[in-house]
Length: 594
Image (tube, rainbow, N blue to C red):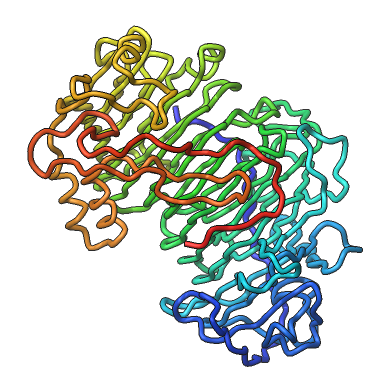
């Protein structure tokens, strides 16, 4: 049965009552704004909304769309080709209304009587976006750091008795119903909530940091969130239970990024080089993303509880780690669950999932739903350290490791080509489904205690399974050949005599199918298909930025046998350098520009 997810999704469309006058922006100078942005406005904590806003020497105090924006700022309606540049190191507050600058808030700005702090009202166009970002040579202290959007609640490694500033129904940055907006290089922190999720009425709850959902307004497409760092959220102590199938009490209820709820709106949306890191929280609260998943790349999600997608098209070079069931004991957790995918062929590759489900029951690591009449291409995955021995009776009971099913609202599924992956489950029948459609398992390596046959790793369903040139290996036997988690690149082959080397089939035809697509995103997937894993991205826990790829990929043979699993031994790089630096306190935060 499809996993039930008690999602704290809020669907809002706050309307900005701005004047219709347009002011001419100033020069963008040498700022590396997106192509098509030709004039810029400037915002800083030392500014005034009566200024012209057209230079760094005459900045506004607020940005258009912030509730407290006034005077010249308020009379400016964002339009395509304009950039709004924030001074680095400054903080805009949405919790403490005595702090300056304070974003302000607009009550009853949505159908659920929620609160909006900052509302996007303008749309750009293809080749002429609206840019909300930074000039990395402009900073309040002289050493550039991201501008901060702060809810003003102190961080805590556990639940709190109450929020200093309760943001339970806030949508902090609401860019719903607008298109072609780019949100770049902000830090979000200090959010606190005390709310209840309602599975039956998701419009009534709860909190979003960034939202570009289009369910209550004009279709929202081609929006970008990039180089953003989200952390430091808190919640009132959980006291959550189920009543008639609904969670009641104080439950988990915050989404860091909330996107569209349909499979057609949100086309072209991009999340890139984003870090959502709850290591300075209780590590068991807050959904990283709900629905906002059309194109997710080069990003890191860690110490959070949930990713649920309804419009997935492309995922690549992402790291998902340290995910557990919410501390409320009720909300269901997911590494990534696709309830509905984009109505197209889709591709997911070069992903790393690890250190998952140390707590919780019946959690999902990866759940895929290829659409009828379309094909998913899923390859170069590495999934390990999932459901350790201490918790296999909980999260492993239903085999929620790699699941395939039909999407919500569809009676059948399409085709999944799942190839050249390495996964290391701790329980048998680690895959689920398919409930319909066809799954082709090709060139995959499964390392599992006692594993010797396909039945150890692959379970059936009402659909069709084609099991081709896969390897199943017992954990101790694999360790004897050098496949271990302690390698720099976990579970990679160490010698030509290893069981994966040269024992797969050449799947260049799958790469060619992707390369032959008219979709540039699928063409890029086709090029990646011709090599082994990039091992996602390196993540700096001191600067909270990512650098990609983490590993130089080795080219797979154009003809001749491929290796089984996510690695290709021939041409593989030396194993040097950690993927994640040791944890450090989040100070003097900085981004890496790509």
